Length: 318
Ligand SMILES: [Zn+2]
Image (cartoon, helix red, strand yellow):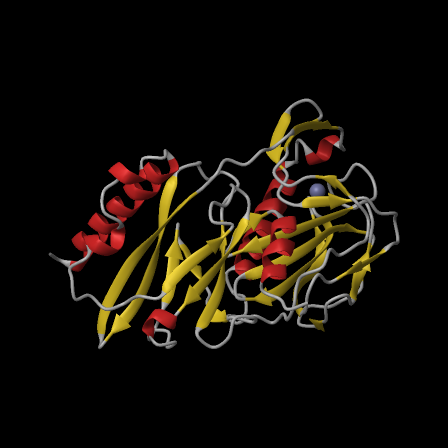
């Protein structure tokens, strides 16, 4: 059987098995993916997700266990899911036989069985294996907000500016450092409580509906804002919606952004340490009052920053 057909067949079997398992039909389910592959195939690494069934908008830790291969991870090992190339790095806690990475589930992902693809090369021959998992539905509230009409009906000039800024951000998010620049867990950038959850459906001035792609923290104008982890500043400027904003690249596909600042205190290219001040809380851009909007991108996908706090805690000894 050609490798692609074998892979497709294995994906179908893995997805069917995961679905049957979720329905409590494991006994009647088709054979698991591993036995759907030709016998004599090389032993693959074990791949595990935490949470095992991530919700839409969450980030999951992917752990690769190479002990079934004598502790040696295969050459050129990579993981792909839904267009994401998941950067793998030495596992910070579990030792040299393990690799770790982060998988981002988009806010709009459907609750359904799916499979990521593990790829590597075996004696010069490409090998791929599906790893089945299931996505759970996210739970999102709706809220109504009143803002400056300019931020609901942007002028043609503002729309052009919004387009340019979106392109600039996309370029930044596509060109991060390949390996982690952080150590230990990420920390919330301000001490206040969360006043606006990730993923909320927002109705601005009774008409514009958008999704809230970060979390809001209660904070007073002028309060210091700290980098959530070490990294390199990739953007520090005023944007139409975000106001004064800072974007930090943490490597391995992870970026954090800090919006509506009254003041930016770092420059592009500057290295920052976890807890180091990057600016001050404000209400610039599309904001109803002073607060910190904290955003996280993983592999180009906006995810719940609170889920990143949990994921990175799992990959830290602290
Ligand atoms: Zn916000």
